Length: 157
Image 1 (cartoon, rainbow, N blue to C red):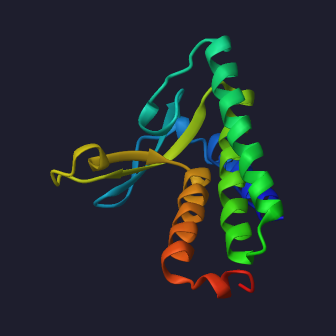
Image 2 (cartoon, rainbow, N blue to C red):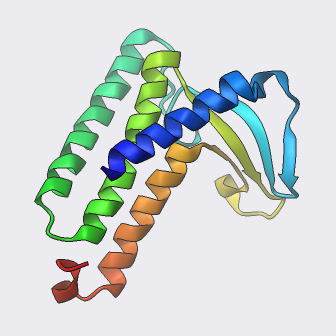
């Protein structure tokens, strides 16, 4: 349920940004000194690694992504922990949202440009979308659960 909700919310937001707000026709919109709204097409994965411009490369990327999602789905179905299932649902929904972009548009639409002038390496500039937020929240929840939730309480959460 969480995965479907994350996927639907991500795709609805992308539709709105691309077709109603028409972000492509607008100059960058500054929300804060460190966050802008822009349109950026990502042909790869995080930080545009492994760009896939050609159809075969895109299919290879989608195949790897599908295998990862399948593995996470098996984990989600088997886990007794509600927190783990929620986290995995967020990750799966985000991954499916970005995969849907790759299939429909050939690249992932990113809209939020997080930037800083601080010397923090590649984290100084990051463009992302809601699917990436869901993935990050899911991973953060898994890490939190692993470090802070006692083993005996995980099954009941």
